[in-house]
Image 1 (cartoon, rainbow, N blue to C red):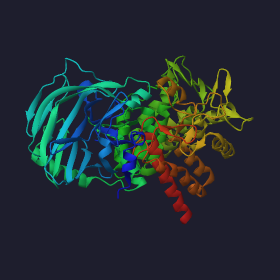
Image 2 (cartoon, rainbow, N blue to C red; image 1 turned 90 degrees about the horizontal axis):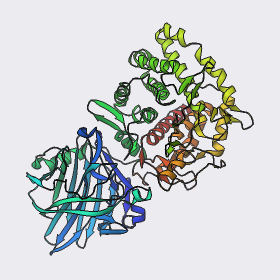
Image 3 (cartoon, rainbow, N blue to C red; image 1 turned 45 degrees about the vertical axis):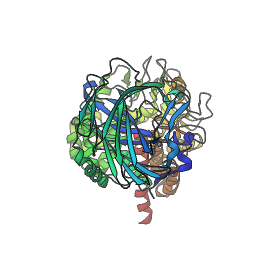
Image 4 (cartoon, one colour; image 1 turned 90 degrees about the vertical axis):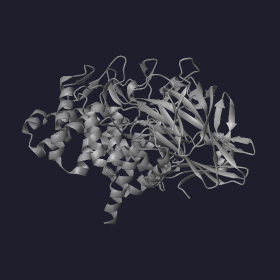
Amino acid sequence: MAYLTFNKAELVNLEYALQREIFATNRAGGYTNTTIVGCNTRKYHGLLVAPIDEFGGANHVLLSGIDETIVQHDKAFNLGIHRYGAIYEPRGHKYIVDFEINKNTAITYRVGGVLFRKEIMLVHNKDQVLLRYTLLEAHSPTILRLKPFLAFRNVHSLTKANMDANTKYVPVENGICSRLYAGFPPLYMQLNVKNEFVSHPDWYYGITYQEEARRGFESEEDLFVPGYFELPIKKGQSVVFSASLDKERPALLKRFFDSVLEQRPARDSYRNCLELAAGQFIIHRNGEAHVVAGYPWGGHVALDTFVALPGLTLYVKEGLKTCKLVLDTMMKKNPSQIESADASLWYFWTLQKYLEVTRNPQALWAEFGSAMKEILRGYEQGSNPAIILHENGLIWAEAPDKALSWMNAEVNGVPVTHRSGYQVEVNALWYNALMFALEVARQVGDDEFVRHWEQAPERTKDSFIRAFWVESRRHLADYVGPEGQNVFMRPNQLFACSLPYSPIADEYKDLVLKAIESELLTPRGLRTLAPKNPLYIGLYEGNQEDRDKAYHQGTVRPWLIGHYIEACFALRGPRFAEQAMDLLRGFEEDIAVHGIGSIAEVYDGDPPHQPHGCPSSAASVAEVLRSLRMIKSYRKQINK
């Protein structure tokens, strides 16, 4: 039995099944994403979603889905499922008897005496999805019909029936080619066996995506169906359907499916699931490598990239090479352009983790030293006038209409958590960056750099504790603004404890960690605001405005658990290993919830801490994986 399975009782319960989503990426920007019963609940869902270079590389839903129909004795059983308003039609999920994810996704249906299996697999480094259909049992002649639903639109928009769509198709070997609109590449839909394509062009109106409705967005669209493929299928026979941006050779599809499947690793454990999920966030396209912040709607964000990159890459095969490719891609931008107060400083933390693995400071300075110097110079010279390095060695960040830290949610153009002034995590990151750069520069003999910066860290350190320590509360201020210290209990002070170089002594770290444990620590990560605070919002729900208000006002962030665990190990030593493992077990419980085989972006601050946001988050997966690696390392120390 596969590690990730669902039984019939779970699958026919739509309230349960529609909350669970499957993901597969092609490592080149494209993906497959739908629910475990095949009913699309988001505008981002689709069997083949691909980046289109002609449209700036943005992702577009091409093949939204396929309805499979089994025909026996002239009676048709449609295995698909769509929602129209409040009605589901057809209701093919009632025929599902088994679902599992291992090397691919497999769904088994029973219709009377027919047992029928569908397998879904996205091809790596190519915009192609393959579906293999196998008739496991049948006592009468059986016909298979496949009805493709086409969208050809950006993932962030919806489409309506219109006169501009090119509803014609071009016959190709064992299939058809469709291109609904100019500028798009053609979509080739082909089978490995001869079939009849029955032309029946039609729009299906008012397909409803319930997750979009719940999130307060437009939720209905019209999809175009050009007709359907029809073919007889015998007991024991397998048929392979391909949807691709390239014309395929049908005779090779079955063998190709088998060879791709054989090469795929199995999702047979918690760790294997996370490692496979980690690989899906790394995108190689057009000679560059990026980290996708989350699926299905996350973009390429500098801060998310640097936070997630070590955990995604450094502890797996070929990981160092991948990590360097991403870093090289990120540094093609001008490193001295400081857009937010913290993002560029996370670059140094990523390099610290990189150096822990390579143990080659000379190579690191040769490859990345220039970028490090440019970033530090950018802060020193004020390349962003809203971010100022003061004489006291602390960084002040203030803009009237923009939040300049990772807590950057806005409502109607106004930041929810403005935090203008000296931000605690920014200045902890600044101190860490200075100390690390100086460490490497001394090792490689860059005396000029050392002379220029060697006095800076001590200035920052001396000012840090005076600015941020709140004696009455025994923890660090979240920020120090024009009005003085903001004493809200937030997790940002954690980084003063977890970063390799800290501006505070261990006695302060111990008090900070105890405060965090008292008010912020949950089984799914750290809250972004303490429940005692009157601004705290315990549930991440409602429309876009409501969710943005809650985003940094109480929601739990799984990625913060990695830095909490790292801080505790540094302070408490190997004996913390079992407690750390207990913290991570909750995520294994959730591996079959929300994004199957992955970890969500955020959780409710209130118990039972339901998952929300991107069902599959790069930072969440990365930091849990990195935490598992830390635990393994410290356990070895105990066993010596």
